[in-house]
Image (cartoon, rainbow, N blue to C red; front, side, top):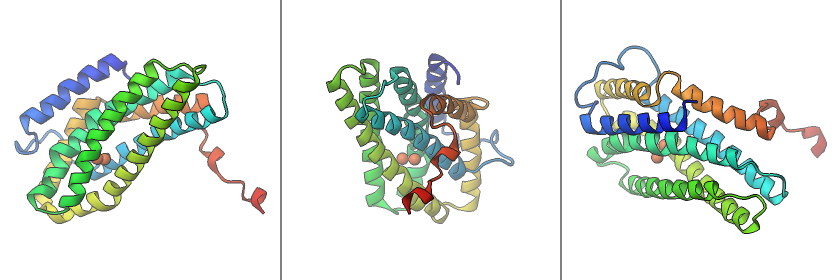
Length: 231
Ligand SMILES: [Fe+2]
Ligand SMILES: [Fe+2]
């Protein structure tokens, strides 16, 4: 992936730009044409976040087993969550998706919970970053605190994104007209390029794959259950 500083800076500038210029309202044409829809892009981000959480959960499991814990993997994984999940994905939802439902006066209660959880997720990510920067595998208190923070973030992020993917995003087509959906798709494709850069998503995944390999969970086949051992 790009260096943390490069991506952080680029992300900040581009997110600020997206928020300031009102891409969708201006009928931006840069992202028009074939490509993934806004909902497909958002669902991809959820997949990336779930993989990042799986890495943190793997490490949390290791804490109980008292294995050596690599602080650089915790730090790197939390940095991916911050850049892709908090600084980009959440901001795009708050800029484009939630207002579409608010304008249609639909799903008010759910929107309130989602906004509250965005704030909590950002706060928890900041706490995880601080804990990761001070982490020492030998310090039992730090291990316990880190384990608890990972558990809370994992619980929040999985439930939150699963509700968005199964309840909120499918309903988008009921509150936006086809033309507006087309503009939304274009705006998402354009900002994905501006904020994450060429292959930005793939680079985030590549970083996570390196961590998965280091933890021994890089091979998807390793998750296939051994059902014969249960009988
Ligand atoms: Fe969200
Ligand atoms: Fe989301």
